[in-house]
Image (cartoon, rainbow, N blue to C red):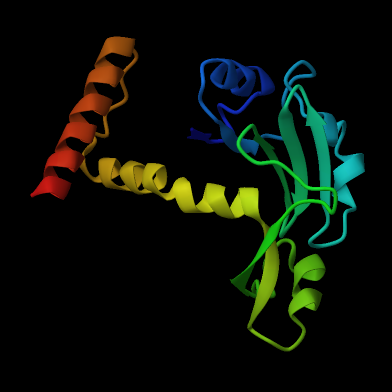
Length: 174
């Protein structure tokens, strides 16, 4: 089960593992102390990583990872593991960020004069990017069918979300 950064916690991944399911997902930097990754105990430990550097911690059979891409990406997984040499990587064709990008100063030197380059990406992040696309597409489709009124009663909001999802699925099937 791949989750977004809103839902991924060590407690959730351990519960999923105990129920016989694997889990993985990105993690927010601003988690409370009880939910925060060990690898990101304060932004100081991960803020100054060089591009492409990875920090790993395995705790309670949960792999916790910090990877420096354009920004630091925090990730947890019970599906992926690491070997004695570190984390497996896969070469992906990446585009150079624009000059106006907020993190261009740290990322653009990696590309040099090239606009695209094959760069290593940890396998857990590649799997996450591959499997999470369906959630984003469903959200994009549902926006086209969702009513724009603000509702304050929870059952009305749930009903409108369900109606938008049904309409988007019917359109996709059609």
